[in-house]
Every structure is written in C-alpha cells, then in structure tokens.
Image 1 (spheres, rainbow, N blue to C red):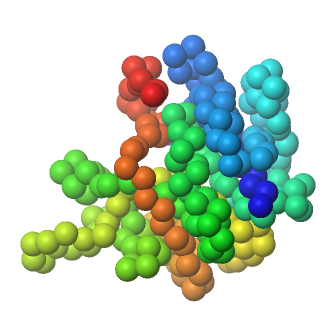
Image 2: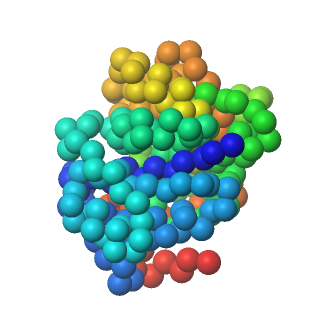
Image 3: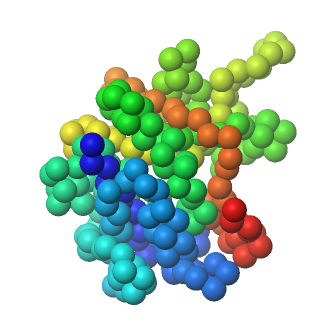
Length: 241
C-alpha cells in the first residue's frame, strides 16, 4: 500500500497573516510540519502544496518536495486533490494542515491504521478526548460525535450533545487531519457544497450530508494547532517530545 501525505499551505490567512512562514522557536511553521510528518515510517511520499514561492523555498531548502498550486483554489482538500492527480499510484492520501507544527508521527500512523489493517473506509480523521470544562462551549473547538462503530455522526462548533441528564457521551475534540482513499478524495472534491457545511464552515460535513462515512480514529494526545496569535505565542514555549 502506498500512502502519500500532502500538506496544503497557502500564504493568505484571515486570522494570522503569513502564518506558514511565522518562526516558531527559530524555524518556520511549515518546516516544523514537514519535518515532523516525514518521520512517520508508514508514509512513502510527502509533498507541500502551496501557492507561495516563499513557502516553496522553505521546503526545498530543507530537501522537501513541493507542488505549486493555483492561489484561487478554495479549500485545503481541493488543493490536496490537485496533487493527487500527480500520484496515480497512491492508495491513500493524507491531508495534513500546515498549521499543525507539532504533529507526531504516531498520530499519522493512527490516522491510517484502518487502511493498514485491510479496511477501506471512504475517509478517516483523528480526535482526542474533549476538555469538557474549557472546550465544550468553545466554538473554536470542533466537536465530533461517533456511533458505536466509530464512524462520525456529526461535527459541530456548538456544544454537542445536549446533556438533559447526567452521563457520558462519545464526543471528542476533532483534529483537522484526514486520510482518504484516493478515489474517494477525487469524488469528495467533486461534490457540491452542502447546507450544514456552509453554516458550520466545516468541509467534512459535506461527506456526511452526501451519505458517506468518516471513520474517527482516536488518539490520547493533542497537538497545539496554530490559529490565533495567542496560540502562536504558546508555540514559542511548547515542548515537543
């Protein structure tokens, strides 16, 4: 089985200007992502898909692979699908966002484990235990509910589920990390956007609304995803182990 990891990285960012190039402990964010991901031994190829010559230079300077993509491409998955056209022999394609500088290799292995053991889900994603005290009501933290087979029921920025009575629920903190069968990735990016996808601004809902399944793989650890200036400051002190 051949697994390709694509890291979509665009220079424009609405919340944090020029985010992929921001230095974290002396190294550009995108270099952290590429180098940490490339330590995962179950993945055969790694490539950054970008619209920026500056980002491309950072990656080529550390010996990495780059494919230039159109700046008008709307989503990370669409950018990944463009790269997939260059790798017709890939069986599974990972979409690793360029704002996950502290991703750990074993997390990527957990993400693709269903494929490694012979299963063929449409796509997989990763989630970790939700901090119910601080993150349950935070719209910046995407929640995912799973069914008894480990497939996603729904993703939301809202606090889900509603606890009318005491108890526990299969709700987790979602990481924006995906793996696709190559054929399904091309199908997914050809599907029209859906109402819930638009109102929640969560593209994975497109798959659910069109009737496809997303396997949710669980990990016990979390990373520090960089979306805000406060998180960027935290990254300067983050200890990667």
